[in-house]
Image 1 (cartoon, rainbow, N blue to C red):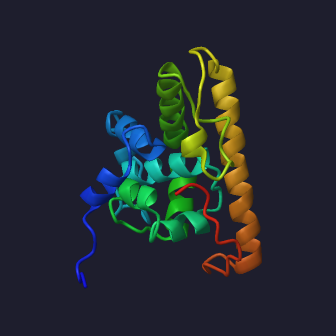
Image 2: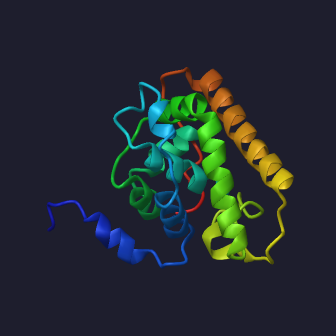
Amino acid sequence: MDFYPPDIEDYDKELPDDHPAVIINNIVEGLDMNSLYLVVSENASSYNPRMIIKILIYAYTTGTFSTRKIARVLWDSPAYMYLANWQTPDFRVIIDFRKDNLKQFKAAFKLVVEICERRGLDILSHEGTGDAWAKIGVSGPGTYDEKRIEREIRRVINEAEAMDEREDNLYGLDSVGFIRDVSYGAV
């Protein structure tokens, strides 16, 4: 019996290089985010902003819009654990980060989409498929122009905000609530 938690490097080896979590991780790690570190919300100050951006982009491009579900899968999904580097921010921390850093988050999200699009990966049109990492389509460069990217990102964020608002009304602002749907979207 192993009493030690698995090493994050083990999850890195589990995920192929073309897995969306690995792609998103590598792109976000390469982005200049100096401006983001100046405005990080107080609740999220103990978490690396890059980490929260990675998990949000991955969640949104794989169809997980509930921040409560995102916080839950950080405990048992190899892809999420890999992106979060074993950290498990509370759903409220994630919501507050998105709200307080929306401009910077949208800019990072847009850059990730543009870089993926240049590589022939269409990461916006397949969200919500459940196993989107296996279905990310290859499209030609130019599939998304700047306005379409911004519109799609706005749509995804609006959907996430609406989901969080519905769950806040249903469960309360500080309650994780009982989430009946145990399908977390992409793993």
